[in-house]
Amino acid sequence: MVNCYGCTQVLLSASQRDLLLKQTDTLGLTPFFDSILGLGDIYAKSKTELARRWILEKHIASDNICVIGDTVHDFQVSLELGCQCILICGGHNSMQRLKESNAIVIEDFSELPETIKSRLVCSDSFRVSNALANTDSRTRIRVPAVSPFE
Image (tube, rainbow, N blue to C red; front, side, top):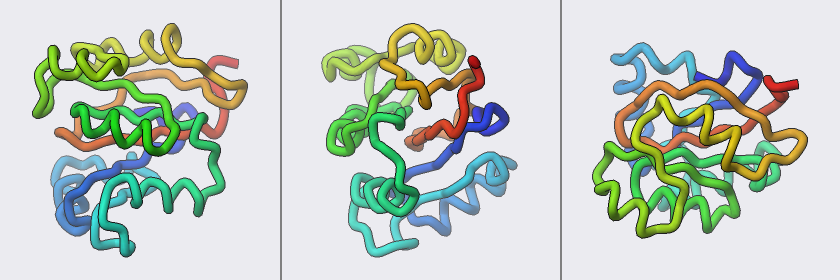
């Protein structure tokens, strides 16, 4: 989890928020997220709309956000938001399908820290480290508050 590095960690899903909370509570993951965004908690009709409203509410520049997901749709959401994206193989889409999207694709969470450090365009305020816990096929939005690399 990256929140121990001063980063905000958000769970974004098209699932109903109540169901997400039950899942994260069952897995003991709820405390690791600063926000859990699912349909039904605000009047959004899509993951993109949920994320856009959250970004505007928090006054965060989208180029300081990295969407970490496991589907081509997660990559499409990141493009619509103007965010960077890393896709992790293991969800509903095959490695080949993920790579066809032209997104950054990794095989598993263990590759995440190095991928972030070596492949993402980082502004001065966007520096992150450490892998995220696998919470099934949910999209994670990470927004750094401070740099753990400074």
